[in-house]
Length: 283
Image 1 (cartoon, rainbow, N blue to C red):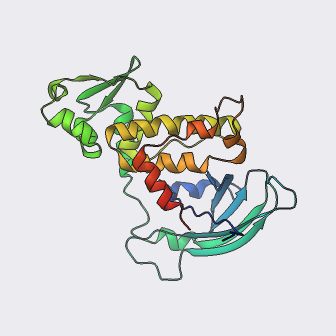
Image 2 (image 1 turned 30 degrees about the horizontal axis):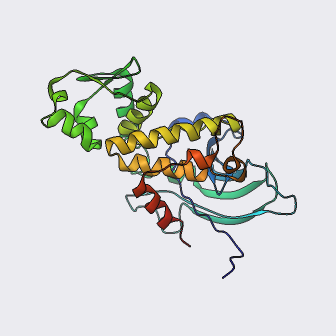
C-alpha cells in the first residue's frame, strides 16, 4: 500500500509562572517557546495583553520551493478546577506554511480578565519554581553529588522520590546511605546538572536558537537519555527520546563534518525505548 501523506503529531504544555507580572509587558511583547516537530523548527508566541493571543511561526526552510507544510494548530487553557465554560480557552486553526517566517494567526484564546478571575489558574502553586530555587540555593541540602570535579548540593528525599536508584542508594543497604558526598562516575557535570534540574522542576533544557544550538541540544539529549536510563527516571527518558526523534531531519540523518556526527550514529536508544518509539510512530 502506498502512503501519500505523512502526519506527525506533537503536544507541549507551556506554563507561565507569575502570569500577573506580564501585565507590565507592552502590546508588541510576546512570550516565546520553540521546539522541533516533523523535522521543522516551530515557534509559538503568546501575547498576554487584554486578549490573550497565540501565533505559530515556521522557523525552518522547506526543502522544495514547490512544497508546503500543512498544520492544524490547536491550543487550550489547562483548567483543573473545571470552572471555565466548555467553549472558553480553546482555539483551533489550519494553515499552509510555504517558507520560513510564515505566521499562522491562532487567534484569541481568552480575555485576560477571564483568566485573572479564575481562582485556580492565578496564582499557580509555583511548586516547580520553588523546588528549582531549593536546588539552586542548596538550602537544607543533606548530600553533595560530584561529577567531573563539580559539586551539586541536593536533598536525598527529593532524589529518592524521583529515582529508584537514588532510593536504593540513600535509603537501602548501599554504602551511600550514610555518606554526605557521592561521586557520580562516567557523567559530565553539565549532564548531572540537567538531570538534577529535571528531578526538581520536571523541565528539560530548551535548545538555543540556530543550527549550533540544535546540534548541542541533540548531544545533550543523547547523554541525558543515558543518565535517565541509568537512574530509572522514565519521564526524562521519554522527553529525551522525543527531543532526539524530532531532531532527526534529512540533513542530520545524512551525517557530515558539522560536529553532529550523523543522527544515525547519534540516535542510539535503549532497547525498551526503541520498542516504545516504534509503537508511538505507528499510524
